[in-house]
Image 1 (tube, helix red, strand yellow):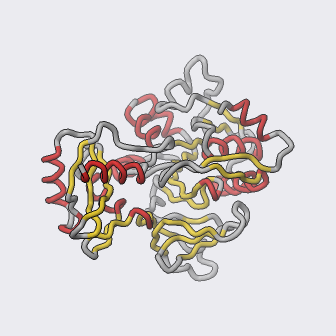
Image 2 (cartoon, one colour):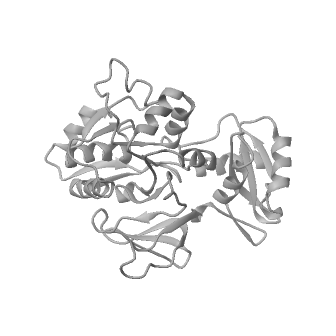
Image 3 (tube, one colour):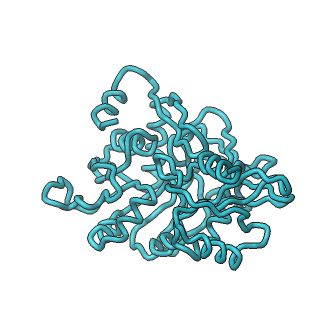
Amino acid sequence: MTLEEFLAEWQNDSPTLLVHTSGSTGQPKPMLVEKRRMEASARITCGFLGLKEGDPALLCLPLDYIAGKMMVVRALTCGLRLMSVEPTGHPLSTLHSPLSSLHSPLSFAAMVPLQVYNSLQVPEERERLMAIKHLIIGGGAIDEAMAEELKSFPNAVWSTYGMTETLSHIALRRLSGPECSDWYTPFPSVGISQDDDGCLVIDAPAVHDGILVTNDIVELKPPLPVGEGQGRAFRILGRKDNVICSGGVKIQIEEVERLLRKHTQLPFLISKCSDKKFGEAVVLLTESDDLDSLRLLCQQVLPHFWQPRHYLHVGKLPFTGTGKPARKEAARLATLAVEV
């Protein structure tokens, strides 16, 4: 979708517009959302970050998904000065070229982790990234190496938590400066709790009608005493549907991946397949041919019951259009390979 097409849809007489979920746990699903709720979300974010009319903002995400659409809505609702560039892996590469209409530092930008990673590798782009007053990162996991590098940034860098159903994010956690944290702080208008499975429950009436039960298993901080700050913060442990039950042991896929990524740069994903003896088995998918080194690494750093029973080479690891692991496709590939 082009910017002109989105603006035409935004300005028509319909109170709703069509968006699609990211497809991280299956096929992307279409859903209608209310424009008034998108405007409410825009005001909440801009208010939290202290953005004001005329502040320069960068649109570098595709308009096929909610994150890109919300950048435009924030500009329209709060009067931000929007600059649009092609949604590539290097969105800052031409930002201050002679063709660019914006030469002052950006007040606001939203990127996916891959764009941030690529920008960090090029000195000129890294400088431009550091100059952004508020950088929000969403749409995928932020690995520890990137988080460590972002800690030293002089301006505010945030990891976002949200989904299409909540019209982008409802909570942020700081990645830069002394305030950096593993804990997400919900916006003041958002209430959170847990269900019996430990999954996050969201009450965000400004952007979503009714209670939203997520598949994200979380840890909640104890509530602060009245008058000592905002309410409860939460930390993501993983998704409920990404739990592998192997021999009576529950293994969180994201936890295994986080631990392994501290020790290797090789591309991989953790998945699962059925197993006659254990019920389910851990499977490691990788684009690398060096399966032996990955097997040795897993034996050295993973608890015994977390270690993969199968190591599979694939031509390309499955990811969604927004850069998230396509878990169902990964499980399908794992099952097919193991059955063969």
